[in-house]
Length: 162
Image 1 (cartoon, rainbow, N blue to C red):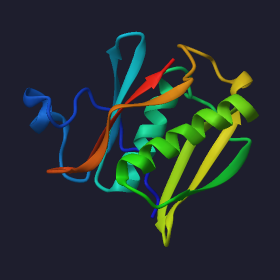
Image 2 (image 1 turned 90 degrees about the vertical axis):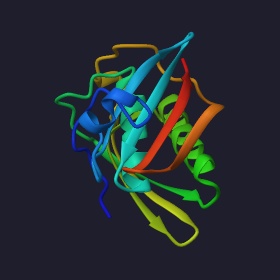
Image 3 (image 1 turned 180 degrees about the vertical axis):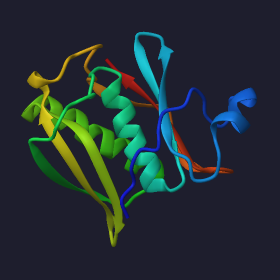
């Protein structure tokens, strides 16, 4: 299953006035919201896989302008099955690790559930070729981290230390 982007929105489930205007069954998107000295990423999708894709793209877009960027390589990652919250944290930690160690920044992501976990394919480019627009993530916080089904599909929220 390819989980891709259907566009950005300005709210997510739980934002009472925005629920019916922004979220609809099967829709996907993400947003960042200010958080004391950090960045809070909220994402949603019609499936768990779509939600995870949006979380990665939301985290990357909090510090980099991906418009017009093309992938120069594809990295494949296996994330071992565990709780949904653990999957979210492990996937975003992997993105931070690859950014710090290899200089890879994802421009597109595919997530597929396989026996034993997730198969993740990240189309990446060199961070040096991407316009940097904010503080680069250093870690994923476990404080108020969540990934769960909701009335519209799946949603997640995570605080990214910058």
